[in-house]
Length: 219
View 1 (cartoon, rainbow, N blue to C red):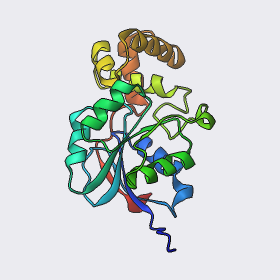
View 2 (view 1 turned 45 degrees about the vertical axis):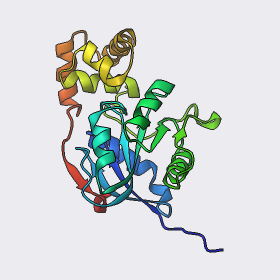
View 3 (view 1 turned 30 degrees about the vertical axis):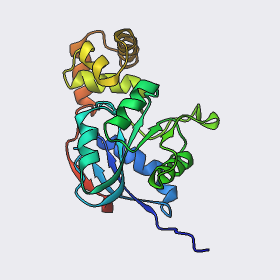
């Protein structure tokens, strides 16, 4: 029997270069199975790909127009949402919005690659956190080197973009109380006490979106 070993062609989608670079680095050991051709910071895929992996960091959730646009892009065979938000309502809405798959960000690199291959084959569409993955911290994000958690960094990114707490709650599908808790924790870590100080810190530390596309040749 002949086994198809052609690697999947991927575009990685997020508004922050550090996030897509982190994802690319995470999957670098699997180049025989995954070939990354685009790192996109504006959700527009310009070349044909097997999968567009939409990272939810500081982005709207899977039921957003951005995901629907990716799903309708003729260059994208399948669209996969990559997120921490793993409740049934979010999953159902993302799939109804055109997403072909829904994958937990806590999966280890090998598990993520296996999940993408499964989705591409039209098998399992939803891949939650596995027992072995509960402590995995995948990829990268702004402020990680300064000690910010993924959620704290996401709050700061959205604050730096000028979103209110209510807008952040809607964007991330978190409760307003959860948003406030993450923001307070973020403030303590970066040593600020006001929103203005947080915004200035964010601007100085790379929390504004990059809004540019880079070719996979640079990966």
